[in-house]
Amino acid sequence: MARSLAMEPDKCTGCLQCEIACSFEHEGVFNPARSRIRVFEFQHGRLAVPYTCTQCEAAWCQKVCPTGAIVLDDQLGAKLVRTEACVGCKACAIACPYGTIEYNPLSGKVDKCDLCGGDPQCVTACPTGAIAYMETSLSGTTVNTTAEA
Image (tube, rainbow, N blue to C red; front, side):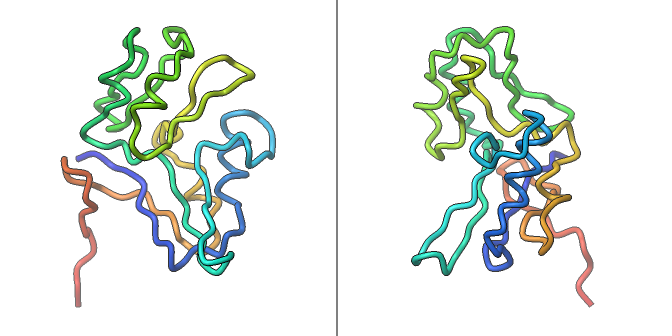
């Protein structure tokens, strides 16, 4: 069964630890602006919501890529960007209805969540458990794997 990130906005404090961990994992710098996960603030900062690629089944990013640079990793269940094939045209970023693909001006390619190869650092870094790495059904909904007492 595939796994994906599940967000619980009511637990998010807006501390940006997820963004910092992501940027360090992928870019080697502590810079939230270079992260593949974002924390959005709503209600004048009273509500913080972490958000990244949902690895959706529709995969519009993959469908529109003219070079086939976005591929499905069957084991992870993630859509990955093959940087050697990406030409930086941004078609995938335009097609993504969730806005979770970013153009990286330093590389001239696009970046998106790759689930850190199965060990998402945003999950590890989150001090409140607002981000979980959970089993999902094919439709992308999370599956409750704990027994109710």
